[in-house]
Length: 164
Picture 1 (cartoon, rainbow, N blue to C red):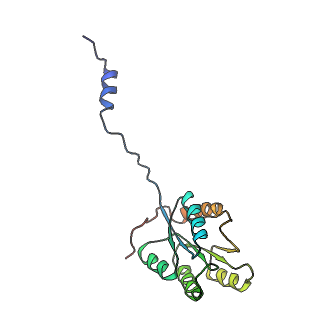
Picture 2 (cartoon, helix red, strand yellow):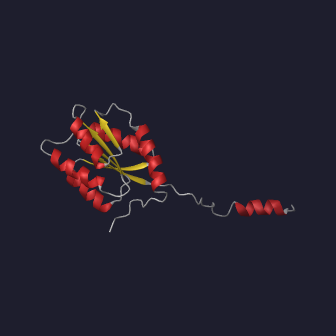
Picture 3 (cartoon, one colour):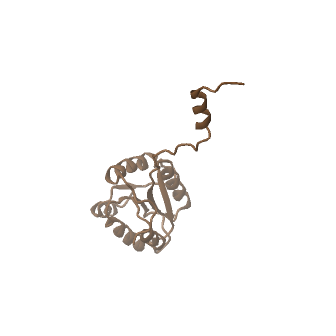
């Protein structure tokens, strides 16, 4: 016959209890990516995802507008360079709409040789204007900085809940 000491009994009973859940929750911030370039979409998706963003990739302005009606985004990355022919006006209109969204950082990727486009984007209040960005650019630092700014602006994100 063995004698069970109180410490042993407590340890044995503790192993039967369910693991204590951590009170810390992962914080999800939503990021909209608008580009018709498959390679740039992947680059944005990777950079955003590895820096704590939940990316939502859209090819067209219509897809993006529908997503904005469903999800509260904290960051939008709009590619003005790689758009389907004849859709530039729609994408610019979407960019203007996104600039009016409260609390959203706007990153606009534009043409290197178009200073008027850069002025237009900056007048909208874009957080960043990136001239000549392509899939070879490392966007991780920008996504990390956007995350830090967003965490200061929105300590409690709304997540993927629908806007009503």
